[in-house]
Amino acid sequence: MGAVVLFLAAFLASAVEGVEALTIVLAVGVTRGWRSTMLGVASATGALVLVVAALGPALTQVPIDGLRLVVGGLLLVFGLQWLRKAILRAAGVKAVHDEDAIYREEVEQARAVTAAAGTDWYAFTVAFKGVFLEGLEVVFVVLTFGTSQHHVLLAAAGAGAAVVVVLAAGLAVHRPLSRVPENSMKFCVGVMLTTFGVFWGAEGAGVRWPHGDAFIPGILVFVLALALGLVGAARQVAGRPAASVPA
Amino acid sequence: MSQASSGLRRRTVAFARFWYDFVVGDDWTIALGVVVALTVAHLLADNGVSAWFVLPLMVTVGLSASVLRATHRAR
Image (cartoon, rainbow over all chains, first blue to last red; front, side):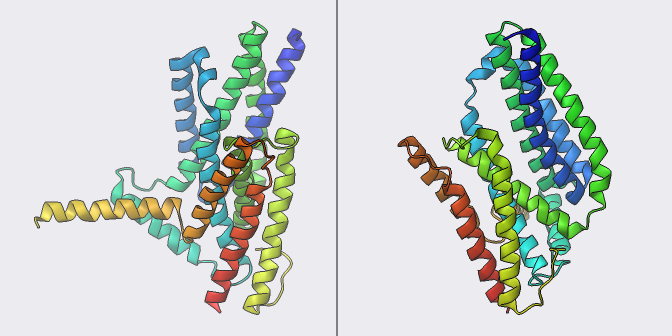
């Protein structure tokens, strides 16, 4: 593998992981607020730096499948719960403002048991998991590509360039995203968390997806179609008039 | 029971309830379905079966059942 190819390979592989993390961070940040989300991102980045500093090249021995299983399983549970509520709201079965009341109650409970009052632990945890897992995969990419070609610094430069490009893309799209109606955005977040939860959870359980990461858009389309179909079915069962958009 | 131990008990219950609500949420059958599906996928993959369909199948069945159950209850 030549230097240019090594740089490009590290760049592209890291960009794929970066976009996955960015999707989750944007989704959670726009719907739950940026403070706790960015706290999760910063904590995950700090944890990554600590892990890399402590383990170095021994990181390739970390059981990534075990991590994917736990992170994927939790994301899938979170995503399905979120999607379930979004479907019920879109179908008119659940009042839109129920969610606000539940959220306030959750924050109150969190305040009762933690010192860091006001932190949205849901946003923090989802952002932390997404960034930590994807960040760890970027580190793996750098170490495996770099050590096999005896050029870890070049692979790290490729990964670093990918992170910068993905961050710039995130900064460019976060404002337009915040103008999307709240319920529609929550519906999309549920679809995305469920998609990544299915993908990572299955990988962690030892499943190999046909075409690897390229299968993710297929899962996303499937989950979206299922969710839209369930909005229609729930409206019919509840006897609500049909509407075109789950807002 | 002293006031201190009663306070500790209340905080422990609140802590446990927070984490249950946080992880499991409104419908415990979804969390159980995810655990069962991951276990089945792992067992199948371990035995050389291409088990990529297990989680999408669980999502379809689990989410549909949960949404329709909640809809019937709300009628």
